Length: 143
Image (cartoon, rainbow, N blue to C red):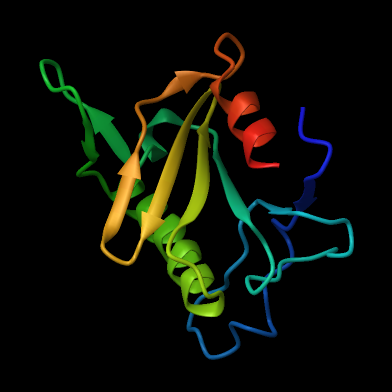
């Protein structure tokens, strides 16, 4: 579905070259590259970061009844997730000359696509990536 993209497991490999001054480790679960030369986390080169969470309580966003848009969840677990994905986006935007960046947040069998820029983020509602083609379509079109 994305033959021009390389998905690299970086969950155990923080970017120590570009992020040594940070007080936290920048290590998304997966980094997506446009070639196969990268084998670890390199925020100066990856295109998309992907974060996996295995419990619904860790979803950084929530959709309230009667509201069309997802908003930031107000739980400690959600704030932790939001801090992680925001730090990856901020590090990527700082290391690369870009107007925006993309992230994918996967919670159990659901996913969200996130478009970051220097003003904030646009977040999709969750969708079941087993039943909906949005995630595969996104990677196919991106690649």
